[in-house]
Image (cartoon, rainbow, N blue to C red; front, side, top):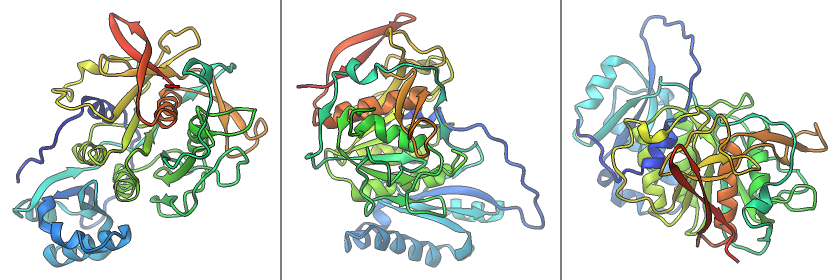
Length: 380
């Protein structure tokens, strides 16, 4: 099997080092099936996928190809198909089936998903309200055409401060339509684009699209996250912004999907994670040939000090992430809530990107352990 090579973004790999740590207890009976992500050579379906612009139709083309080319895979075991950011599929497979699949010449990556689940990069907050001013203040973006795509637990469709495009919102967790049943995604959306005077976002009034990839408990599967990235790659326009405030272990297939998506002119912002460590030391960070359009964000407090649990690195930027008050899906404090973490830092950069049409200028920087990280503010 050939190794799937794409341009590597160090921060992506950073990102990907933020992903999960939940143990799965699975009772195996008869044939043991495990979840895998299989990436195919993009050229194998290039002509077929060009025949339609409809995302669901593209994915159906991939599903039909998988069914015809891999007779050992039953339809019921295919959990996702990918057509844009990645060409491939995820499925429940036996070890015997995997050995046969790996022998196919157009299979480039076979990756097990048992490293863990994706989860929010959030911690408990105390009290404060300071963050939007630190990145240059609120900007009216109600007339902007660019969209912020939030890959998370969903976004509240009924919150009065949020403008969510329901038609473009989707759920990839097996239920729902992108509506938030956890709160984390609504909080992220508010930091980016909330209207009103209570908790305005950086790009106030901008359109949000909810891409639900985690369930009500805040956890999710990497194959569903990749499906969300794939959907955005097929649906977003140049200049749109994607926010991923989720973490877990490194997956090559996720890295490839993100790498391919930013080539379309889409900006991707990812939380650096809350492990109190330098991500420059990760063995995954081997090169940085191209960093355009990808931002990995560390969290700062109101004194510009790195948050106690924030990851950091020379390839990171930094933004407010401690005691951030933003929108919530239920009314603990009138539909608003305080949260902290790099989850909260990332959407500040997403908002700045929207408000500044992607033309970022670092007006400041912060240093930690001798490492300097840029702090971007709105370009006016």
